[in-house]
Amino acid sequence: MQIDPYRILFHRENRSSELISKKAGTMKVTGSCYCGAIAIEGNVAADKIMACHCTDCQKFSGAPFRAVAVMPAADVNITGDVSEFRKTAESGNDRLQGFCGTCGSHIYATDPEKTLFMIRT
Image (cartoon, rainbow, N blue to C red; front, side):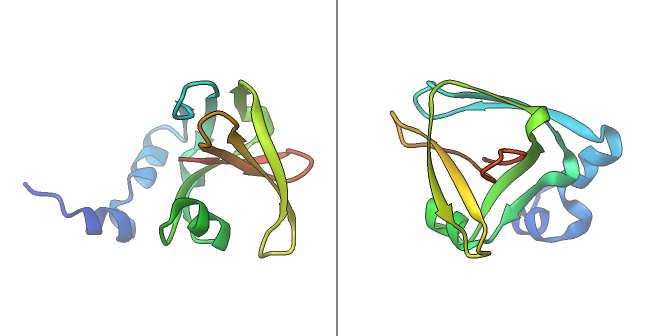
């Protein structure tokens, strides 16, 4: 059986996040920047993994969208020296953009109080 990638990405009944949410509710995610200086661990609700189409995500990724995992601060652990810059998003809200100062990998976007993280995937 051959799987059509377009159908998996764009047809609701085939989204993997929905399959995960039916089985587990949340899942553990881990990752790092390209050079390994920053590591990320977290627990994300399956329905909080999404494609963001905002202008910032389009510019950072060079694509029409970027996959993100949205997690409350209590559910994410980031180790390493994250560099940040503050920017006003197209919504008018201030955002902190976190990235690795060594390799330049984008790590997250968050509000200035760091209550909710959009982890870049």
